Image: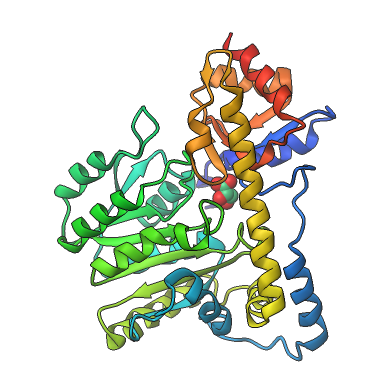
Length: 391
Ligand code: LMR
C-alpha cells in the first residue's frame, strides 16, 4: 500500500538550511530561511526569554495536560499588543495557542473551511507554505498580484479580485512585513481594504507573523485593527517565532473576532475540535516563557528593547542597501523603503545558483533574501557577488 506514495522533494526553503550548513567556505552568507541575525551573524535566544525560562524551570510544578487551547494566559497576555487597549472588543475576540504561526494559519484555514469557505483569495508572491496549506486542505486558491513594478503594494489588483468575491470566500492578507516582498499596504490602503471588506461577505484571514519588525509594534498592527474595526468577523493567525525569537519552540496563536460572545464560543469550540484531531495540544514551553515575559514589567521592558534593536538593525541594513545604490544591473534603492525581514531580488534561477555555487551566497529559489542575514561586514561581498552575476 505505502509503495503507492511517490517521492516528494524536501521543502525547498528548509533544504537550504542543510545546504548552507554543509558549505565549508568561511565567508558564506545565509540569506535563506527567515531567522533574525545580529550584526555578528548570530541568532541568540532573547535575554527576556532566557530570564523567563530560568523562572519556568525553577517554578513550574507540573507538566500535566492543559487542553487543546494551550496556555490561555499566554493567549491573553499578547492581546493588548495586537488589539490595543480594548483587546476583546467587548467580548468579541478570544483565541487559542497553536504550534507556531504555521499552526495558526492551518487552523484558520481549516476553521474557515468548516464554516463553508471554499475559495481563498491571496496576493502573490506569498510565503510558499500558504499555498501548500490551502492545497492540502482542498481549498481553492485565487491569486492576484501583490505588488506593482514600482515597489508599491497593488491595491487595484486586490480590489479587482475581491470585486468578484462574496459569501464562501476568504482573503488571506499579510498583516505586516510582507513575506517575501517586504512591500506592505500603507495605512491609507489598509483603510480602503477595510472599507471594502466591510461592504462584502468575504472573510478576512490576517497572517501577523512579524509584529514589531517593520515600523513598530503599534504601527505593524494597523492593518489588522483597521480590518477588525470594519468587518463583522475575522481570523488572525499570530506568530511569536520572530518577535520572541522562539522559532523551533513553535509558538503561535489563532484569534477569532466574532459577531458576539455566543458566536465566539462556538467558533473556538470548532478550533478546539480541529486542534484535538490534528495535534491534540500545542507544545507548552515557549508559550509559557512568553507569558512569563509579559507578566513581569522588567522582562517586558527587556523584550521591547530587544525587539527595538532587531528592528533598528534591519532598518540599518536596508538603509545601507539603499545607499549602495546599485549592484551591477540591480537597483537596490527600493529595499530601503520596504519593511521587515524579506526582500525579493529580480534574479534568474541561473543567477541564484551562481550566487550559491560561485559566491557562497544562499537565498530562496524565488530570489527572496532574508535582509537580517546581511551585516555591515558581509554587505560589500554580497553587493560584489550580485554585480558579478548580473554583469
Ligand atoms: C520563512 O519564510 O523563512 C519563515 O517563515 C520560516 C518558514 O517556516 O518558512
